[in-house]
Length: 443
Image (tube, rainbow, N blue to C red):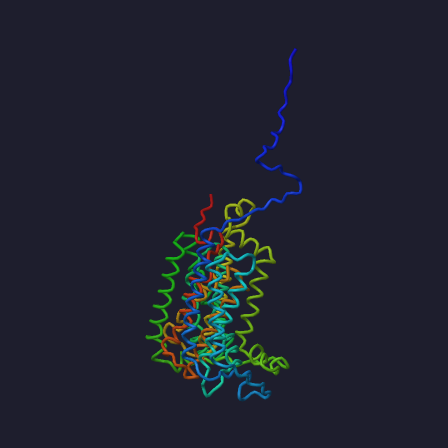
């Protein structure tokens, strides 16, 4: 006679409480090393800025005036005044508290973003209040915002160029060279034809040709993307500099006197107080920049071509197995990005001064590349970052007119300092397209 035994759950020991259905299971997450490093660096950066803002409190006297309207506007909005020392002191305290909380605590949810936003506003308000306090002239907010949008225009075009390339897996460090060549072409073509339309077309063709060079050597000959981008930038600088010295400068009246774009006020909208001159009384390139952001977003996220571009940038082998022409998609994306680079280059000549100077783009291509990274390869986010850089650049110009007690050399350096700080301290760990910068060889 055999017996059968069955395993039964062990009874709870007297020392271990029984688990019932009503007990709650609490899941705890741990902070990764990358997140902790970013949080600590962000907090330390805010603390440093807070200390500097605290020093500015001792250098502040009087009140700061901010004008919402220009002296020539038909509708004059009121000028408001902020007390200098209290505002700068409050800004310093906000920065110190925000930085201290980030360093000491791992804040849940959206609190880090909220604190970062408050700290950014405190930095801008406190710095502008210190700069304008005790000055005879008010700080022109309408000029600041209009100039921000104008100066952000080439950065937006450059960032869109980089996004289209990198979404397809092609790292584009050559944005600077593409815009520089386009600026030179726009100046020469505009000078010869006296037509802004032909100048823009010439700039776009130049941007596409430089993009074709990038695509040829990265896609067909598998050259390292970053090294090639540096080479293209040097090639563009040398080529435009040589042609400028040998052809343009000796005949500047013929080859370097292009017409410039005039503001195109939109009826009714341009007459609105404050926002009218800021948003609706700009040049055609500014309007095109806004359209380009919407177009790039629509193409990337709402069309089958955009889906193929993103799939090629993430996993070209998988895209190839479902019948997508990887090389064709990469070529089309890079050339499409060249159109944006051409428009951005045209801004520096026919969009502003109508003449070309050596290296006229002055590093804007690299700032646009920073906007690509900070904007996480998204057209709208990159445009917001470009506006931030435009705001800092315009602010440096505005502060010079107020005779701010700060060296003019530092004011000119301010946009690039802001770029370094933003990329190093505010971005943290970001993930680009998985196959970005990697050569693809069809099996």
